[in-house]
Length: 396
Image (cartoon, rainbow, N blue to C red; front, side, top):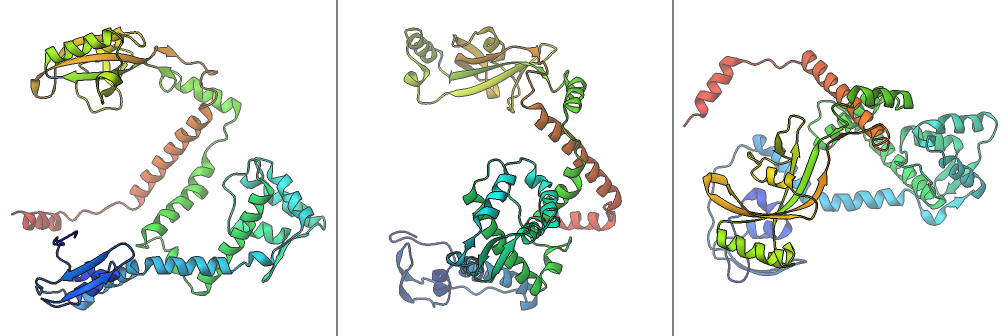
């Protein structure tokens, strides 16, 4: 609470969040204690305690368990990391350089970790080439085991120019992850973790991510040259029509004389940074009907938009009088920092970005259709009588 300060009241729930609060919560009125933590040294004097009516234990049990889990989270994570790291003793690793170099060479193929590894490794195994890649204290990893790890445990996010060191680190991490998975399976945690009705927000997020990867994303069409050109033709008048846009800096004052004084300094060579420590940044677009609108802003009236479009890059204009919020007069000095013309973008203009646009477009459509189907299949049933009763009881 600082020197001589009072801290907010402490209740049983808050007392579980750190050890010092837990000790303080057990004290009585008038007790004085000297307590030390990693970041503070405290002299605590309990000035008063109040009893409150608690909910029944069975009703509070779940909240108590969750609070205790949060309290011991750091220790749990440390034990988890220690157990995971101990699964593979890096000092015991023995690498087969020839087999490792072969995997590194295959990894240079951008499609290798996108599924190509299956055919490559299986072909080598079928042809009698199944060398041990590494040995360690608890076993060994050959091509067959590498295939299993890639299929069922872990896979690199990026396969572009993967180095030998990166591949070694990946294989060690895959073995450690495999150890954790097997431990979880032995504890029969799978039925709880992969329950679609789980309350665990982390697992719910992962289930959704896995569903998107295996069901939604696999339906996205291939971005072939033919598909991309057709996508451009279908959307060139919407996605790929570049509206005119202008970016400005704006100094805004309520005093016209002050604004005129600042403008004089700028006309004499001063920069915005020299006359003010802060200024507004505004962006306006002009649609195909000639209407000027604020860009990515909730500004209702683009008061400075017309003046902004009259400027060329680096030009300054002012003092511009307009009505600000509440109808008050304001006075602005503006400088054009960037101006983009209106034009139809060609296929060559968007060649570097159209593949990602293509993917995002189809992904969004697939997700919308999936959500629509799910709402249809699992439609919500509204019990209006219950809803009306709850609304009525909530009124003051």
